[in-house]
Amino acid sequence: MSEEDQILPAYSQPFLPAAIRELTSSGPLSGITPEWAWGGSTGNGVKVAVVDTGIEYDHPAVGGQVCGGVNIEWDETVKEKLRYEPVEHPNDLAGHGTACAGIIHKIAPEAKLYSVRVLGTSMNGRAYQFAAGVDWSVENGMDVVNLSLSTARQDYFAMFHALTDDAYFKNILLVSSASNFNEPSFPSLYSSVFSVASHAGRDPFTYYYNPTPPVEFGAPGIDLRVAWKDHGYVIATGNSFAAPHIAGIVTLIRAKHPELTPFQIKSILWACAANVRRV
Amino acid sequence: MTNPNDPKGSPLAEELGRLVQALAAAGKTILPGSADALLSSIVEAAARIFGAAAASILLVNEAEGVLVFKVAYGASDRDLVGTSIPINQGIAGYVAMSGQPIAISDVAQDTRFNRDFARSTGYVPRSILATPLLAGERVLGVMEVLDKINAPSFGMQEMELLGLFARQAALAIDQAQNTENLSEAIVLSLKRLAASDAEHPADNLLAALEAKPEAGSQNDLMKLAAILQEFSRMGEAERAMVLKILTDFAEYSQNQRRLNVGADWR
Image (cartoon, rainbow over all chains, first blue to last red):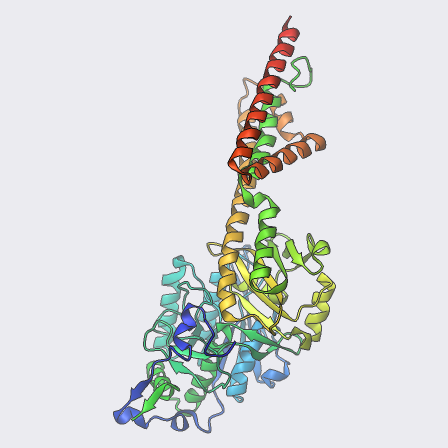
């Protein structure tokens, strides 16, 4: 199937070659270029949390940049129902978190990575583990948080809304993947996050801006070679792998321009998108 | 048949006990979910439509922390059903944990994955598309199609489409689980009711409810249920004929029973 023939799930539809809208950037904003935004940046000094299945700390794809993290477990026996276990050398239950961390490391090789493991065997407490992972990242000085997971349950709308606004006001960049199903999922639909779906390209720095949100950015997410469990690699598809591309790029921008806030960085991402022409 | 002369039990208690058994069989008849046949046909249809060499459905067993193969189609399907894999490991595990689908290919590059999967299934796929079976946000299990024929991997479009198949399978499974829960709830409340009435001890009822159904009679009931389900798929003329035969037989057997009971009373 050629790129043109692809049919993508709902949230990735705006990033099909035929659907991508050409936009223009004019006036002073047209002076913003990828070279200015992140040229020469390695992500040095920026802390990135990956809220997921964990990160395999010694996987070659993360280049020794994993600096610890936390495992958050659902535990019915304790009062708060949540158990936090700090980890120096994190592991990964499935491979998914390592895949995301590997993508971020490839783009921002000197950023420090933190594993926030919130997925586990508990089926009951998933949304609360997830929320606790976002909260932990906010409270522990992370600059960028990759969220390649979401919840579709309306009951949690307010909880995640409050959490992501809190992060936004604290100058933290949350990057959230859209659901692969045609359903609203949180926190990917909030304006306080960088919401990402997939396009069919492979170049890690080619991404598009969608002028008809909620999903604002399209990054590579189809048939990518990604790191997996036990020092392995697989070819994987899903919006999960699009989000860490944007997380990697905002990490570079944060490292080079630490004074910029989330909304400013979002404007810069818009200005540097592959479908925005500078006039 | 109820034997009123049986000193062990009262007719009412036995009747109730049998009613509960019949309820389980009725669930099998009216709810397609109880019949693995529907799930089998869903995985087979998915495999054919997505051009996959194999497909399967795994169900969450949270108490044991495993995913159990419920139905399988294609390669090594016979041995797979009933086996389990840890719920927090591998690709199916990730899907169960996250509630999101994923497409993975070229797993042969990953030696550990290969070994583990081969050990649990006797079969190493090149490509996998796995999607959650959801009842609301509760993950009931995972549906997967394996080895795309004529292509190296499953695409994103197939990811969304498989989600639609999975929705049907999840509905059937959810209904089946609810019927099971319903039968259990009825038995439980009958037992409570019996125990709470001190004036009229109902030991017979309790014994009847607790009695394990005789394997032979239970099997017969289930066979009957399966045949009834078969009727639902027949043409109108066949159904009318079968209905006539069954009605006649029921009438005949009721008459016989009345005669027998009458004989006992004399």
